[in-house]
Length: 174
Image (cartoon, rainbow, N blue to C red; front, side, top):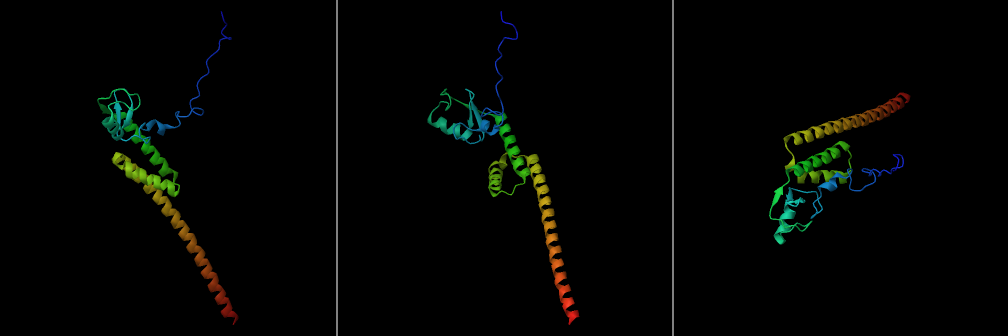
């Protein structure tokens, strides 16, 4: 009989930092296995696999089998929960991009693309949140521009004043 100190315990699996595809990479969980893009209009088969509605529809036109496991598929069903999770994921991504405040043209293009393609998935509260965030960012940028404008104007007036003072000094010497 082995004593308690001699028993070997199985090591705990590393979840976050050492395993790819773990909790840290959530967007991979939302990829369609057919088009490898984030799922749009998630639909699930009876065998439990989820695809974009367009992708699974086109696949089923060619063959009535699941593209993942080859199970015969007669019907697909909307995956409301996954659609909601993807919408929340898009909102978080969008909010992070807005909050980052970076003026990176590539990021702005991505943000514009996201807004264009996903705007139909945003409800009124989401749009209000975006508008509030954008209005706040706009106020900050306007205040910054106004401060810069005032500094430039102050410098300009100081230079004009110095120039006029030099002219006055020159006239008084003559």
